[in-house]
Amino acid sequence: MVAVIDYGMGNLRSVFNAIEILGFSAELVKDPEKLQLYDHVILPGVGSFRVCMDNLQKTGFDQSIKEYVQTGNALMGICLGMQILATRGFEDGESLGLDIIPGVVEKINPLDAKIKIPHVGWNDVTFNSIGNPLIKSMKNSETFYFTHSYILKCDNLNYVFGETIYEKSFTSAVLKENVFATQFHPEKSQDVGLKLFKNFINWTP
Amino acid sequence: MLTRRIIPCLDVRDGQVVKGVQFRDHTVLGDIVDLARRYRDQGADELVFYDITASAELRTIECQWVERVAAEIDIPFCVAGGIRSVESAERILNAGADKISINSPALQNPGLITELADAFGSQCVVVGIDSRAEVGDYWVYQLTGSEKTIRSTRRRTEDWIREAQLRGAGEIVLNCMNADGTKAGYDITQLRRARDLCQIPLIASGGAGNKQDFLKVFEECDVDGALAAGIFHRGELTIPNLKSYLSSNQMGVRT
Image (cartoon, rainbow over all chains, first blue to last red; front, side, top):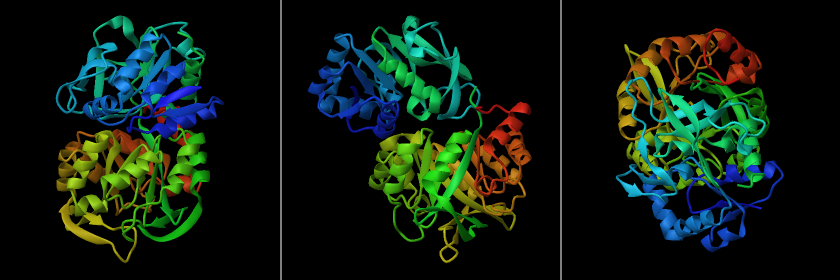
């Protein structure tokens, strides 16, 4: 059973649908205390960093996510759900994140005025790791759907799992022990996205 | 590399997909989910659903069909039609849409763009602009879903593009009304001018008649995506055929 954290933000339905299409069961979890009952948890998110963190604090999910990560079970953040894992963010002023992945979240800052923000559309992700179970039966580079204006700058390059070029290279996926996260939307990326969910659900960190 | 998006547009009226010529004389083409699934399977990069009568009839689109689409479709899709408030946008996003597009309500209340961007992030907020060439300039029209309500706003298109961006829009869809339904090609002159003003993604809309038109609008206007309806609905061009043509002409597309 896969938990999808429902803290009042984001497009949960698509993530939920993707997991059900794969033949697994998913549950939307609103009660932070229940998180510890699962061994695979997905943290989605759409909106701003500050509002996201406020909602996590209001609902008590900030603490329960940290406790869940301590158990060693698998966590997957998606889009803002990846960014919020960082130490701090600079959307809507500066605010603290969950501080699970050391790094900061900053606005994409292109040198060339022709580079548009937000970064929207299908772009390539090159995986740094070979043979990792999370990218089983995938190519070294795959195309996923992105839509975002901010990126996570990882302090520790060992946690950079995937990279994407949008003028410059940025971190589009991270992996730190049992915590995996993507800036792109697997639930909107057709077959390759489903494959990634399947790998995540079958993953024992 | 970020690829150019091919976006079939489905005009929705009373729960069915329709198509008109120059925003008039609509005929029914089929069920929303059937068409959406077909384009998804063919490799569309995104879908747009316009409830073309919602603004004209002063109602918000119904959520049931948005939920039906979301349950079937694993590519991003955008919904437009009479979204006038953060609450109505939230219902549509919660029903499973990835973005919302606002047109007439943004013209009536430009502050809505900012409210929506603050609530959901700019990447969720698309501003659709219906623009027509007249007396040497381009002008914004509103309530274009019905010939009874359509009217000019006396706003210059370029001014409105600038304002929409400043207010927090994450993408502009420029519907060039003179070209719409004519199959004579995208309005290159107008789109090029719009591109020069746009620091956010720009989507071309109106006039696609063949695959060369798509290549031309990407090459000459540097748009991020090209939207089309009739040419796909009538089966005159398939998405795989279009993408293989673009790809063989060194235009980056997802295949």
